[in-house]
Amino acid sequence: MKVAVIGAGLIGQAWAIVFARGGCDVQLWDGDEQALDTARALVARQVAELEKQRLLHDAASVMSRIRTSASLEEALNGAQYVQENLPEKLEVKKEIFSKLDTLSDARAVLASSTSSIPASAFTEHLPGRHRCLVAHPVNPPYLIPVVELCGAPWTDKSVVETARSLHASVGQKPVVVHKELEGFVLNRLQGALLREAFRLVQNGYISVEDLDTTVKDGLGLRWAFMGPFETIDLNAPDGLQDYCNRYGGMYQSIAREQTSVDPWDVKVVDNIEQQRRSLLPKTELLDRRLWRDERLMELLRLKNMTDPVVPD
Image (cartoon, rainbow, N blue to C red; front, side):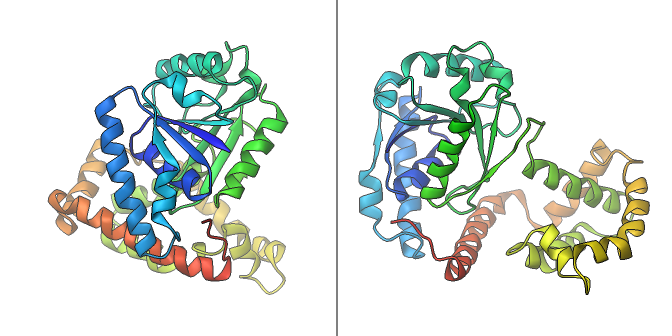
């Protein structure tokens, strides 16, 4: 399969790795020629690191499947699937999808990496709107495989299934969001936890450092290999319904507290920022991000031992 990746920023680079690692021929395009040159160098570096970490088998073969295109028309020529990654602005999405719909093969699936804008907001005016959807990744998608697929009300179900099959075939973990909603599912789950985390720090119950420890060395250990429903299903003698009967009242009481405060207040953010900077100066952010990616690679290798599907 030939895939066009539109936009060569960090997400575009990551998608190029995902699809090429999965055996697709990738055409990478960006309106900025310098960005393309930079992207190819960064992709080569990340692919080499993935091979070093034993998360792909042949870096040279992967790189041979990634080519840059001088024009949008060239990138789209023959593409069966298009992954757009331009800035998170509605007018930008409308403009690029008009071009994609006009220039691509009429049977090609057109997907956006947007993390917040529903497909209906930028595809309603298109003759080919039935083939458009959101394919929202988790950064970086070559290490965190979940991708949320969410169509507009007019997106053909067969288009969603085609996208789902493609992403599964290249080693991703596609999930289908059946109705449009702001932030899709992953960001809403993350937002719910963040809201309570900010509130707990704001009200003096816990420090930023200890809150992070509670998640990474508590909830996060289970969540690395099972979701919240399976977690509670296993945490009561007779399963999920038994858990809800035992603890539902407590959670309902807590929920009434959680809607009573704005966790994104400027003073709250400033307080948490100060605590984070005391733990990690800004000058060390990049090194810590690289450390994070190395830990993700180690975790992914471990998960692959129980689910050993790593595309060549």
